[in-house]
Amino acid sequence: MSDVIKQVPIQAHFGQFADRLGYVALDYVEHNGGNSSGRFVCSGCYVDIATQWVVRAAGWGKNLASVESVHNEALGRIHHHVRHFHTDNAPATLRLLFERLQEPQVQYDLTRSRPYQKNDNAHVEQKNGDKIRKLVGYWRLDTQAACDLLNELYRVEDLIGNYFVASAKLTSKTYDNNGKLVRKQYDKPRTPYARLLTHPQTSNKTKRLIIAERQSLSLVALRQRSDELQAKLAEHFGQLR
Image 1 (tube, rainbow, N blue to C red):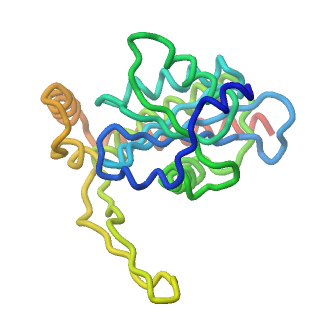
Image 2: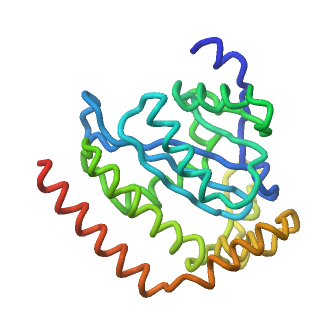
């Protein structure tokens, strides 16, 4: 694994690419309930930093096979070409992304954060709390059934978040002469769907795909399904306890 780490370059402050489509930050969250022993569910969070398009997926365990299942699930719901992946130093994630780079049909850049420097991947770190912990808390989930429920919930919640929930995006920061942050500026709130649809680098194929998907969705039905899945997950967690 040390050889892989040496071959993946470090990129500090990945947010500098916030205007470029296809620059995706990713990170994994453990659902171990404060106990890292044994096998438990892990969630992967993928964030396109230009559009704020977020995709989540869960795998049972931290091994390479689990990470690969999460990655494949996530890629299936990112509708534009990924030009660049940026991750932390998790061994299984780095190995998977690095090994796929050796395949001739795969084309993306790969970088990693500096060890113990969460600001290098701040976009996804913030989403971990907002999109994962706020949704499913800090429960210990350690069965395949829990993993399957979480994946179904993520599919529904990603449709809600990407197509219906508008948010403002940080555009600049102002500091005083002493280097103290005094002001943050944000753009007009828009959905990730709107950002992707209007981005100058979005292909016509991607535009047609997301327009068709948006037209097929009902926010009321999605909210109802999300509530049902959250109740099932809570019931399942009660059984695990």
